[in-house]
View (cartoon, rainbow, N blue to C red):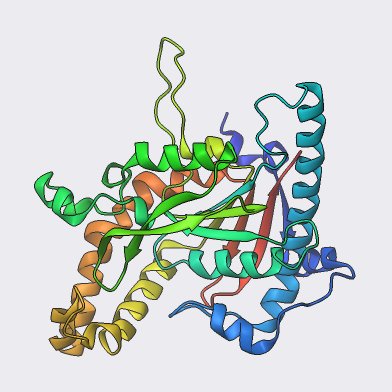
Length: 320
């Protein structure tokens, strides 16, 4: 029997946009229009109604989750007589996953801005897993430049150590800095994370797992450190369109700088640039989506389903 055909067996509750918007209740709107404009990505669209109807209810839900986790942590600390519980504070970690060009960065920034307004989570930090990519020199040596963004292109041990230190309450913890302009990890440049109330971790493959060992030995996955995870979803043909649109906009902006890694693309004709974008999408980003990213969608706690106009039309929330 194909259980996918029976919606009653789904671990998720589905909400239309209107149904989800009602869950905002009386949560105040803390962001002004100019702030919303600054938060949206290059080719993403973020409206006031999107924040009010989708992200405010989500911030309310997450505030409840964080408060419950903080209470549980205090109870556990008391039970353990305050042994191995740090300094009385454990960051709540939220993972944000999804395809290239789906709008992960916008979602992560909006959640950061909203959650920082809640009284129990005044300090909210954001890191992307791009900083944990292997340097280009290593990727080239290993023949992985065409696999950049695939699970094997990351320094997984460094990322796991970073998350371990965050959960242990160590301070400060440093994450490598990535430059999209230079398309590489920046040597000797880091971002400090100093015991936030919430840490948002955004990346393509943050929900990725591997095959469990037959001997039952512990093998940590990035998602093991998440308290909550969000997957941003859209149809493949829509994602392709958004990727090409973003590429064409970058061709007219950042790519024009002679120091940009992608400067060569700014010299292409519009037809050549569009063909190049489609080639990159079908050669690299689509296989990564199909093989590594999309299969992790059902592992998330919340799925935000986008339509072709970038607006979120459906929300799926994992049942407790």
